[in-house]
Amino acid sequence: MKSQWNVGATVDNQKVNVVVSGANAVMKASNEGGRETLRINATGTSEASVTFANGASANIYDLNIGNFYSNSGKNSLIIYGQGTNVKAQSINVGKAGETVESYIQFGGFDAENNFIAADAGSLSNGWEVKIAENGKLKFLLGAENAFQKDTLENADKSKAIFQGQYVKSMQADAVELDFSNVTGLEDGDYWFAILSSTQSIEGTNNTFNNVAWDWDSIIKIANTGDMVYNGYQILNNTLFVNMSMVNVPEPSTYAMIFGALALAFATYKRRK
Image (cartoon, rainbow, N blue to C red):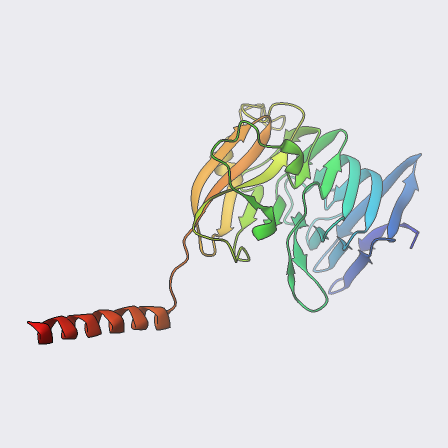
């Protein structure tokens, strides 16, 4: 599937959702002044979204989500599924001073409502990344994204879900993490490679207010699921988040354990 397109919702209560799915699905953005641009903008109470899934690909110059005409509404780019590959030069999400909700979401649900985690390198860019006020990067994580290591020294930064070139600015709560769909892991510590950059992201100056980033305020844990958050680490210009899996036995398992203990105690008393 090949097409030129520009997505926008300009009527109140309208929902526009473009889905690009499948290994042979290729989308080409509209040409604006010689630059191929994908602009997702909703106004009023409208919603505008574009989904790339299941091996689809796109090569965009300017990726603008909710930072142009929008002053309210909801704008989203959703990326999930094995082999899905979206590339952009410049990425801008959100708009300062407005109430518009704008985000890029990694991971999602297929047509049968089955959860699909984001694959490594699902979004990469070659120049600037700006996450402005009311802009977010949402990560719906699965067991596919987890890895165990005693040390991160040899961790592969190319496994980061979002591979940025020049991460220029972020606001508070800009990185939202959801672990509620992480299942099937044994007890233990796991690391998730969230975001990487070719430049340093530790102590980088925020160009909006010229102060050093505070990652503790930027990272927001929306849902830990069955995991426990242990903090983050930045190594090789990559943001890693550490989580522990704690599998809590089902109530029926507790009943079996207590039943076995009671039987053992009764047997012990009879022998006494």
